[in-house]
Every structure is written in structure tokens, then in C-alpha cells.
Image (tube, rainbow, N blue to C red):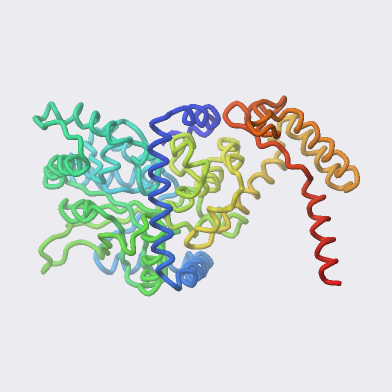
Length: 482
């Protein structure tokens, strides 16, 4: 997938003006957030599972070489194959080689963010293969010629009307009628995908968790397309990344309690499937070949660094759903595979800060992402670390650097700070318009702050500064103690 993170600012501005996108993201935000809150509240020891998830991931990352080698041995013992890919180009070469040896023509795919990261679809299509996405959201955006805008809901930005028009354009020539309701849209997609399931030569899926103890690959879905993609073709390829490995089945049980609740607000996903190699002699279905492609793509360099915590991510999307920036602009503005807070941490590491310097700064640091992360990744701290590293690298403009230098001098002189803040409050009050009650209300325009006031009003300052209110409160507290 092409890296377009340099275009973040203009892309974000364009997204903010898209009314259809705003409506779609608003519906998605309320649905994801409300359902997650309900099911996490119902699990009384949810915080204990979060702590367990963090600790298990930390342990695995500290011993990653051991668990990856154990996973590889157990996959091979069951008749499967494990392939190691340093980067996306190597991963694609491996996949292409497997498809060539299988004399494949049609390839069906389940959802795999790693294949998006590697650009696997484009690599296959350039070699003449027919590639069909089978996850409904992925299928929709494939028809639209777009990339996923969410790591668990690829077409979350699409309205029902947009999907209806898309299906009408591509399905009507095949003799299908126009469909406008959700159930009918899903049913029509199923009818078309059914033929692809039955005629595909190779199936590619992702892998949510790799269980080292058993050599199992676990995928979690709600549509069942992952099972059909893996079991019907004669070759099954799993494309995943090295940090997905976990120690054992007990750990898997804990992560499954976290994943569905954090991702979609479900107690458990509809399908949780474990793959354990190719079809055995007595099995009634399954692939003849089973391959796992493990992608590094810079992850081994994150190990032991100050950013290692991001490797705990289980790709639930909770941080995206709770992020006011992501829910305002959607995923495409981020310019690469991983949007939202987790993407703003991971993308600059994988593609270089020089290519993604705007992403860590596209954050209000409200802290919601860190609060809801099921494995307690300190996302706000990692974003601040990126900002600090960008400053050290000299990426600031002259104006920003000058303002921060002025703030540094000011913050170290409390008396001067107090005087200037009181003066600033007075100036802001002059710009505030009179509301209907005759009181100072909202600031519609402010020199030097047009980027803010062009799209929203600025609240007028209160009657007192924070410091004055704090001193008053402290005095009242001291008096009450006497």
C-alpha cells in the first residue's frame, strides 16, 4: 500500500468538509463506544483481564525468539510450513511462489491488515491472479477501489446509499436487482461470493493470535468467511506478523475475552477458529497445504526500544472508536494502513518519521485511547515521545520553535506568567461577542488562531484565571481547617 502520510493535513481538511463521512463516522462512534461500555461493565474483572493481557504480551515480547521458534516447530510437526519475511516485498514473493507452485488462478482472501501493509493484493494482481476479498467490508471497498478506513470495519465510512449504488453498478450486469436494505445487501454479497468460495485455488487469511504451545493460528470473525476461505481451497496461506504470537491456550482464552468486547462490544465473536496445519487423512475438509508467512517489516527493531509497548496491540480498534480526531476525519486521511492513535504511534516507526511526522501531532492528548486499550498500551505517552523525538530531530518550523521557546521562558517565571495570563484574559474578553443575555459569550475570530475559529467558536475566558480560583479555593480550605 502506498504511503501517503505527507498528505495528512489537506486530507484531514477535506474529510472534515465531507458531510456523508461525518454522518457515517458519527453512527459508528456511538455504536462502538456504547456497546463496548455495556459489555465491559458487565465483566466485573475486566480490568484484571487487561492487566493479564499486558503482562502476557510483555512476557512474550521479552522472549519473542523462543516463542516464535516453538510456534514454528509445532506448525511443522503438524505438516504445515512457516516462512519468514523481512519486509512486505519478501512476503509477497513468498505468497506468489506458493500460488505459482499450486498452479492457482483465483485467490480468495479473508481480512488481513498485514496483507494490506505488504500490498499483497496489488502484487498478486500484477501477476495476473484474480483476487477476491470475502469479508463484506473488504469486498465493498475492493469494488470501490479504496483501502480500509478502520482495522476491524473496513467500510465503516460507507453509507447504505453508497453501498447500494456500488452494488448496482457491479452486480446489475450480472442480473442482480437493486438492493437497498441491509439484509438484502448482505444476502446479495453472499450469493456472489459463494461461487468464488467454491472455485478458488488458494485462500489467504490473517491471524489474530499464534499459539506457540500448539502451533495453532486463531482467527476471530463475525461472518464465517474466514472458515470458508481457509477450508475450501486446496492451499491456505496465513499472512500475519511476528508479534502476534502468544504462549499457550490459556493465554488465548484471556485475549478472546478482551478482543471482542473491545472491538465490537460483543461478549464473544460469532466465529473463533483455530487452524492446525493441513487436512489429515480422516478429515472431511481442509486444505492440502498450510503455510504461515510471518512478517517482520521493522518490528524486531522496535523490540527493546522506548516504543516496544505498541507491539502489544491486538488490533481491536478501540482506540480508533474513542478518538475524537479519528471519528472526525475517518481512516483514509492517515495515509497508510493503520489509522487512529495506534497508527499514529506505529506508522512513523514503520515508514519513518520523515514520512509521517504529522500523525503524532494529530492528537488532542485527551487520554481516552490509553484508558480503553485492552492491553494497557500507554498510547498518549508514546505519542508525546514521538513529538519529543520530532523536536530533537529539528522538525519544528521557525514559528512553532519560537513559540515553544517563549513558553519555556515564561513557564519558569511564575510572577511574569501570572501577569501575562491576566493580560491575555483581558484581551480575549475584548474579542468575545455579546450573547443574548448581554454577557460575554463566544469568540468568533481571533488573530493568529484562524485555524481554530474558522471551523468553531472559541469559548470566552471566565471571570477569573485558574490560578486565582485555585488560590481562593486554597484559602477557603485553610479557613475551614481552622
